[in-house]
Each structure stands twice: as C-alpha cells, then as structure tokens.
Image 1 (spheres, rainbow, N blue to C red):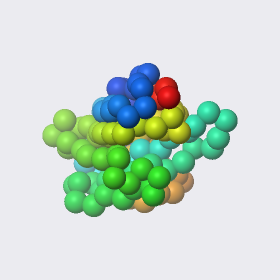
Image 2 (cartoon, rainbow, N blue to C red):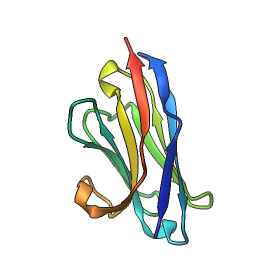
Image 3 (tube, one colour):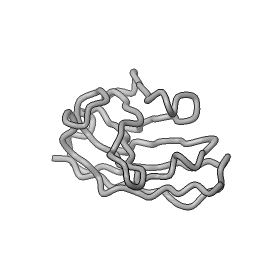
Image 4 (tube, helix red, strand yellow):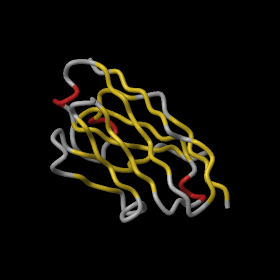
Length: 121
C-alpha cells in the first residue's frame, strides 16, 4: 500500500516556474514507477510524465517536453515535477500516481488527491 500527497501548487504568472512534490508513505515506494497526470478545467485527466522505479527512465507527454522534468528520491520517498516556462494551458489539478511505468492511467494503482496549478497570462 502506498499513500501519496502532492504539494507545491499555486498561482504563478506565465513564464514562471513551480516545483511540485509528491510525498509517499508505505514500505513499497521503491517498487513502483511514478507518474504525474493533470486535469485541466472541464477536461479529462491526461498523462504528463513518468519515471521508472530507479529513476533510470523517464517519458514525457509531447506537450510538456523540454519544460517539465520528473525526478525522484527513493531515500526520501518522494517524486518531483519541475515545471518551467509555464503557460496558461498548464492550468490544471496535478496528480501523482504509483504504478507501472507508462502513460496509461489504468496501470497506476495509487493516486494522490491533487494540487492545483493556476497560470495567469
């Protein structure tokens, strides 16, 4: 069992940066790939980025490549999403999830409650 809690969201101007954090509890964090997803207002949740259990592999949605960086610290049981060059279309609730490496929601077993990111133009 893994419990996840996101933090670091907020209101930021376009062009700014944020670093989202996801703290995990439970013994088996290191067994899981971690993913970040987001749900823009009025839209379905979508894949953002994923990182393998040891951090050796990462994969990003095309819309965020070059601006978003996913990382993890297994000793701290945490995963991070560095977001640079924010755009208004990045406004969404951001979720972290633990599961199998990839972009499909159904392969992730555990989810956090989400953190709101709002980008003003």
